[in-house]
Amino acid sequence: MAGVRTSREKWTNRTAIAAVFVALLIMLTPIYWIAATAFKPRNLATTIPPTVVFTPEVSPFVKLFTKRSQLRDQPSQEEYDAAPWWEQMVFDGGEKVVRNRKSGKVRSSGYGDRFKNSLIISIISTVLAVSMGTLTAYGFSRFKVKGEDDWLFFILSTRMLPPVVVAIPMFLMYRVVGLNDTHMGLIILYTAFNLSFAVWIMKGFIDEIPKEYEEAALVDGYTRMQAFFKVVLPEALTGMAATAVFCFITAWNEYAFALIMTNRRAQTAPPYIPSQIGSGLPDWTVIAAGTLLFLIPVAIFTFILRNHLLRGMSFGAIRK
Amino acid sequence: MASEVLTRLDPNSRAAAKGLSDLTIRNLFIIPTIAFLIIFNIFPLLYSLGYSFTDFRASTNAPANFVGLQNYRDLLNDPFIWKNFSITAKYVLISVTGQVIVGFGLAMLLNRAIPAKGLITTLLLLPMMLSMAVVGLFWKLLYDPNFGIINYFLGLGKFEWLADPDMALWAIAIVDIWMWSPFVMLLSLAGLSAVPKHLYEAAEIDRAGNFYTFFRITLPLVAPILMIAIIFRTMEAFKTFDLAFVLSSQPTTELIAIRLYKMAFQEWQTGMSSALAYIVLIMVVAITNIYVKYLNKVKAR
Image (cartoon, rainbow over all chains, first blue to last red; front, side, top):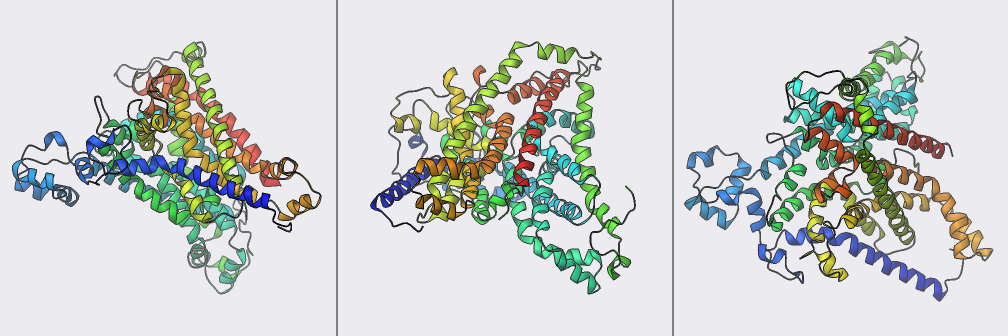
């Protein structure tokens, strides 16, 4: 600024910095508390005053993947060998569990499977939504389409519906075709849900790639398809990455469809973790462990995405 | 569609004569998406439109009887449904107002030279990246009257956040504000950074006060983007299901989406719930239209 820095201005700035740090503290405390609770021994999770200093334990994570009530029975060697690697890893995961493997059976809780379901469903639906979305965005960006705005609005409108509204007919349809409680069922739903978003974000990105690039490629003797794959697509890659992260986060966190459409086989973690709370005193350390593990992929992506967040969220309404 | 020349690029270029025609490519790229969305959005909606005129229950094998507009009539005359709508409206109002105040406030604070600004902004964005259901569940622990840290830090003793019928809706809205203020902050920051610096310099030369500068320069220029944030959040808050469903089961927190879920998947009144879904749908379409109108207005600037 042109003005002379007065002491009052400095003071205002310091107050603002202090306020920002207070806000940061408030906003992050719940997340910190999840992380802290995930490493606490059970008896320290619900103390007042809250326990801040404690020796971290991994037992909540071990308990998360194993059912405590079934720790007493012995898994046979065959059962152990037949178990998939992620369950074997859990069998060997902690001292308590290893000991129980000798004296008692270890059965995996549902969490590992739910986590795996979340990964499968989110990743596949993201890949589908981004690839279809990119092609469609290119189509709308570079070619004349009759009633283009209406089509784009139609595409966007599919995302505006409350999930519960769509879930009723989808549930009935899926029941007829046998897609309830299948991975495919959720993959289709999440792809449909994310596709509209992918088209809109990608159109923003592709509109900004100069048409001259393709024209030059066409003059060089490329076909339109070659020009798309060799010239436009590499330019659009950052946009696709940003879109993918958004789609992944949406699919990863989705709750309503997963609750309604899945039961056991294809259930994802968001409906599973709350269902474990049941009656009686829940073990918050285990819930925190499950929550924390579930947050990690998204936290990593948020960090990767930080510079793209804005454009993606505003549907291209903000142009820099 | 007509087989007119569809490319905006030169149709006489050599490339147009080779490979797939632009028309084919366009159709190949666009039609699968449109078809996919029609099959998985429009078709199910028509399917349930049919059911909304029947007394069908998905839990039995009894055939559906056509009842005409009876479901709609019953729903619109049901005071409990209107109660659900008014709870939803109250919830939307509380949470969106809260998000605008907190989010815009944060953006104003961050819109100056602050150490580690990028890192702080990223950290502040974290809540909105998380799963509402999973994080909402954990807030149950934070709100717990006996050992929750919220009561401890605020010195509230054994205050019953979620068991108190008057407080429960606020408690849910607070979590929503915590999660989504960063979204308003993000958009506001973009708006604030786009305000030309010379306007502030001119105001300073004119010795304009902070109050004047804010209301005459900052706010009008940020308003369009802030409006997007508000409309976005209004629509999302209207649809809220997971957060309220996981956190509380008070009659005073039964948002319309929860009522709809219960009617469809707990009471199995499939026909009736399809009708309610349609009523909600019409409301959402109305809100969406407002949204698109504002979006276009902002884009036109």
